[in-house]
Length: 215
Image (cartoon, rainbow, N blue to C red):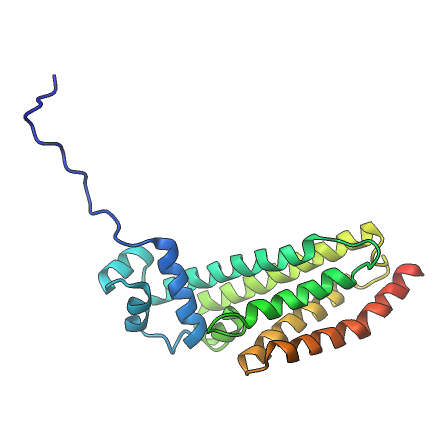
């Protein structure tokens, strides 16, 4: 029988005083803005509103936190770009979805205080010396290629793209354009200039794809 006079048992451990999602989002934006080497633990603690012991306990060391932050960015980017490809207009073939795809990348890379692709902008130099960061970067690039390649293969089945099209080369061209958009955004190109570049690419590419689809 329970003794009502007995004090209630205390739960083990201290409750978390932070929201892990918000903390990781803050870390991601800090790395995105200042880069891996340019971001100190003090910067991260200030942005995440955590002390060092709590940061280490929750996320590991700086490199592990960086890897988690970049994975978070990639998940967000993948969803953002996937939504741009989701709607398919049979009357315009690939014109609308690919325009939305490149414009979505521009929107992503020019929004907020940080510009460019968080991974490409911050991991390139570190990948030379840090195998885990190199592995992460390569995986993210493969994921982007696979997402677009899958869409283009579906476009062939839907009749929007010729079966004679070189899907791998087209995937590389489009994802390379996205990477260039990210680098140019990081270098200070504004949204209007980037859209002009993207639209010029598609204006030259899409008629050729349309001709292949009719052949």
